Image (tube, rainbow, N blue to C red; front, side):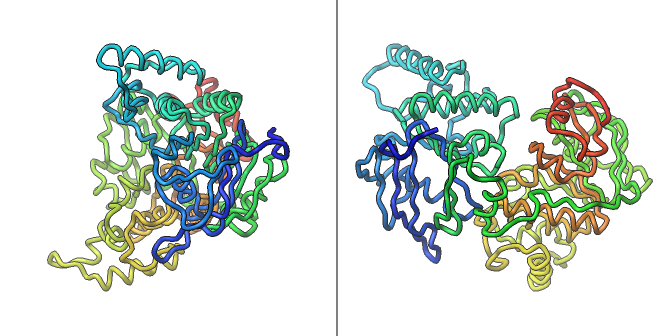
Length: 505
């Protein structure tokens, strides 16, 4: 643990303020980071985290405030200036060029007087040295698009270290990682800390914050509202600082009254990713689907929704066998899918929220090719109230909403279809803790109305906290069923997910 009383901070951001037209993004914010420390930067979407990091990375200039590195005032007026000052930002999408090799990505944009074979030879030497420093071996001549996500992240880390970064910002670094890869990242973080590198770690996953961070600092509504060493704050206190109120339970699962079987799946297959999957889903039930990345969970629901063609198997709805060969047919049968990538698959990000709502519901609001915008708006506003969607009005562009509110817009368009089977694929990915809570409450309410919910999640606390039953998949097959999630642990789920056991619990 860093003794902050006896060391000059590696980084100090003092009284930082920043405004955009109509928005006070940051108001007199302070942040301190020490060498060899992991500082978790917490806050809901819109709290000001991204703006603060963009100021540190030179993408924004603050209206007021000062940045000090090693006690010396430093002007961050461009990304290049930030790099020279030793700041490296690893964004969630890594900012890598897929068609270039790991080596080429690391040194892209770095000027060198070396030419041809000599330059490549020197880059190889430096790249190998960087990966050795991180402690993970990566094929430096592999195209980045061919590397696993975890190795792409290592390339992004190597890139910032090649610029002599002493301050590394990691933005949602585990969003696309498996539990095994998260353990690998933990080892990398420990190695960077041992070298005196300070890390600012941004994540909505509180279990990771407790695992990785030495200290937290919390923003809310553009203001610094608190900070504490990780051992001196509970998870409930973190949540209360972030949302400004106490949440009774991180996972407010209501006791459900499961009704009749609504959906039955028998021996659904599309080799090799989905192999003889069978399960049932009741009205009023939340059925969790767990498993490692690549286990076949998303591929299974794509077959259910008609996105991909099944090779064999049967789907039954309300006791009747149905043949679903397209999403349009699935929608007509009352099945909807909230995709894991809501930005590219669930919404047209450049269109308004009302237009997104209306796209899936043209039969309700159009006649002879003309849209009745008034009726469309009335229907959308009804869901704005019902789902507490935070929008200025229906004309707001979808991409300007927070993740939680985007998810609610997608849900609104399916509820207008009167869908009975709701498939949530990673419903809270990239969503802050307050918005997660609202999504959980909505799921409870939908289940209470008799809707049948299938929820895919890679977050084991979420799966255990919100499911009535759990199906665990491994390599395209059902590895086991958990009938009472309250009686099992995350380790029990992982044993099934990794194929260590095949059972019903």
